[in-house]
Image (cartoon, rainbow, N blue to C red; front, side, top):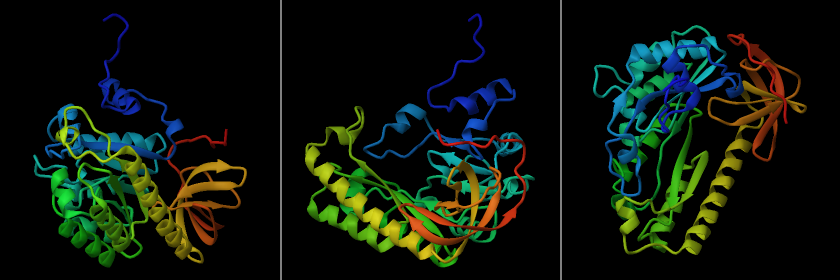
Length: 334
């Protein structure tokens, strides 16, 4: 077609796809110092509520050399932190001789890259080598996002979730024991067909037991073409809304307690934004922090935390680590 450079599939992110397709400089400045690095696509699980296997195909890992080369371009354009993403990130390299740990080790050698963060990863795909890598590699963030969805064994099986709840508990407990200061975040779905009051209470119990530092809460929504959309025991919408509110309130309370526990400590913050109240960024455990003074976007700053302002920690800078690679403009509040 005349004048068409590339046709982009919907499943791709436009900036990443353009960079890959035309191998040209793309202005990433609007994305800030944290960038996504997609390393795996597709899914071969068949969760009954999910349409992804139909829309995104089977598992496919990005070749390590290609992933590292693209990571280097991102860092050269100003990225300080890369978020490794994939529908089933923990299966990275399963069809090759590489795995996720080998990839993080290679990425860690990129000069100027200060953090590597793992996106959502199923507990059943988390092994001892990966936990050891998080515990010992200073560039890998002490943050695991382990999707839970439900705390009911029966609902787990009806969802056809990979692994098991017992495996989930084992991984969460081993991770907290091995990695000091680790934050575990999760996804929770309420109102899945057949979820009765007892099943919902078990989900609340699991949330309390694990003590997730942050929850992403979703109400079940029937997706045409998925088995769960055809299940006869659909939960009424008003009950889904009420359960969502209860879980969100519980998650907010646990998160506030966690943030309060960090008051009085020293944390390292990646500066992502400049505001009139001071620079703002996140710790490697994904706590938001604002501090007084000024600092360049993309720098790591050690901060003495003095208080909490709603969902944000507040403090004073102690030291600045490293210089951001490339140039990123200071982003002001709109």
